[in-house]
Amino acid sequence: MVHRTLAIAALAAAGFAAPVLADQYETIYVEEEVIDTTTTDLSLRIGIGGLVQPDYEGSDDYEIAPWPIVSLEYLRLPGLGEFGGRTVGFSIGPSFGFVGERDQFSDPALIGLGNVDAAFELGLKAAYEVDHWGAYAALRQGFGGHEGLVGEAALYGVWRPVDQFVLRVGPDVSYATSEYFDTYFSVTPTQSFLSGLPVYNAGSGFKSVGIQGLAVYSLTEKVDLHFRAGYDRLVSGAADSPIVTTAGSRDQFTAGMGISYRIDLDLFD
Image 1 (cartoon, helix red, strand yellow):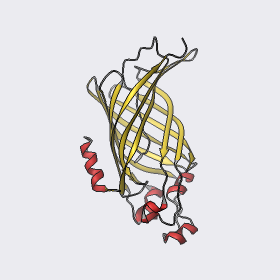
Image 2 (cartoon, one colour; image 1 turned 60 degrees about the vertical axis):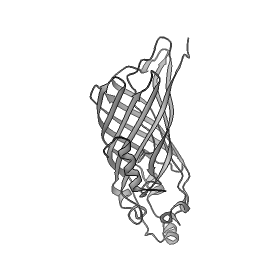
Image 3 (spheres, helix red, strand yellow; image 1 turned 45 degrees about the horizontal axis):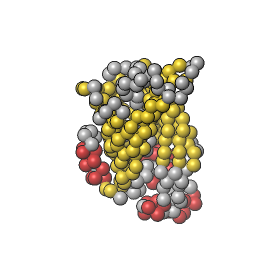
Image 4 (cartoon, one colour; image 1 turned 120 degrees about the vertical axis):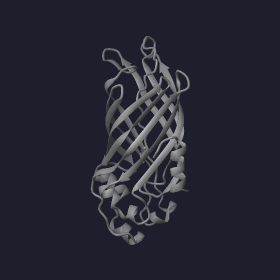
């Protein structure tokens, strides 16, 4: 476990003043890169990095975890049109999420709460971006560790000091249904008896508010460096959970960096 002071130091080292999850999933935006649309039908960006994040949502201890970087940057479907590429304005695409397993024996605060399996999330993201600002909203269905609906929305500014570099920073909110809140923040009577925590029903609704930053530097036409950092404050039923208030923290920090490569495929010619 890495204590909170290391996480704050990592934030500074990443070059941000102060998002995963706290978000454990990556939000990638289409960059204005040169894609040869005469020979390309599908462009995927795939990469990997490292992320300093809470051990579990609501924890005040930190870990270094893998950061998968995956985005759909361009798609051409015969008869339907083109999506992505060097465009601005409205776009819609897939949204993916992953929440790692929570082991009750990994932290004394979790003993008696039981283990929670890893969860995968799949859904859609709608975004609108112009030269200096953008916004997006995403909604995903969980599978595995939780089966709730989760999502987030953000408004951000865009800064491009040079062609190879883009920075997006702005506030965001996250939300979830009761299935998600019950899995990670509620305490059942049985869990209360085993853990010593009070019985608690976390409800549903907004989960956190914060500020997120994502920077991308293009090393070559296809290779990018990614930097991210942020702060989230747990709110409502998540913030008042005894799992958080007894031995955790409402303040959640993240920071990371990674590298990715764009794969261009000709599918239909």
